[in-house]
Image (cartoon, rainbow, N blue to C red):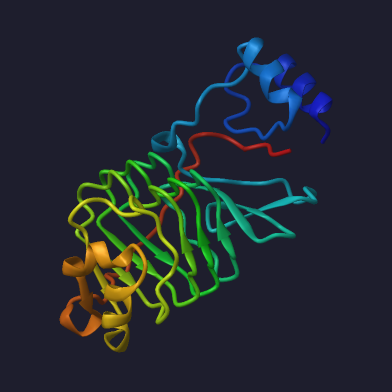
Length: 220
């Protein structure tokens, strides 16, 4: 749908008809001025669906994916990241309270700005071997996140605040010294450990239940 069609549908719909919409460009400001938009409350987002006819986006494993680019636009606390996603967009899981564990597949090369910022419930993260860039505050203010496992043998690019304070980072055994000497990683040297030091990494199987309490989501 076009921006104009999006505006017309939302303006005429009853309150609660749409949980999440994606206007673009100039239409965002117009809809804010008409009190039609508000900030996403990730803690209330439990499932993501896209109409089958949508040509730009698709929903997989409770994530919103841009088809052509394989960018994950947004996830929720019941998400599993698909194995062909290339980029985790900025803020995609921001403030997603209820998310406890996330596995980032080997296909992902970039983890966006504040992608997992401000999630007190997040306790365990595994990052695949393909990551090359972890942007600013990607795992910041995740105070209960004690451990991150990174399977990449080459240290990805990071910023000074990509990770929350005191998180222990486990990397491939043969790459420990490489990480400790890498740009900006050297400041984290005392927190970089070999994966072999962590003996309990096996993930406990989870049953993921998407509670269909929020209605059908319409994307543009």
